[in-house]
Amino acid sequence: MTFPRDKRPVLPMVPQQAPSEDSLTGLVASIRDAALADRRSRGLPVCRVTLDLSDDHAPAVGPALLREILEPLLAGAIARAARTTADRARRSDAPSLHEVVVTSIAFADAIEIEVADSCPGPARLHDAAAVGASLERIGGTITATHCPEGGTAFTVRLPRRRQNRMAA
View (cartoon, rainbow, N blue to C red):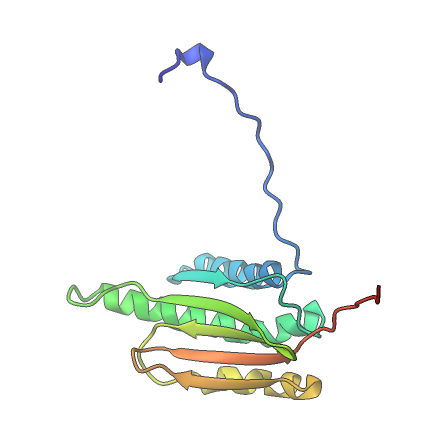
């Protein structure tokens, strides 16, 4: 269906609200956006970052501490993936896209958040060391896994926030 130029329907503009940093998705999206914006502002390459998180996964830490833990891991993964993407783009025989994926899963007593990149090479263990003290304070852990198909996955395990339940 076509409309004459002066008779096109006008759709109202609905402003998009940024996700709240009080939610897991909003906080990680904010970290991602800041890291990508910083790289763009410095003329550095960027990569694709996929978030597969649930806001139902509520760790027992506040947003400031969660940011302190996740920011170095995500920024490091983005830097590594973007650098590898740019290097491989120069070679026509290699796929040029690498990405970072952030996922979360809930267990009865904990939340696990995984930051994984798809870049070949050794793990960035100093990224894990940077957040170790913060995690230790709250009873969390971090593991680094070198994936056989390439890349590194950092899994942060955090105590789960207790749900307030009322008896009937």
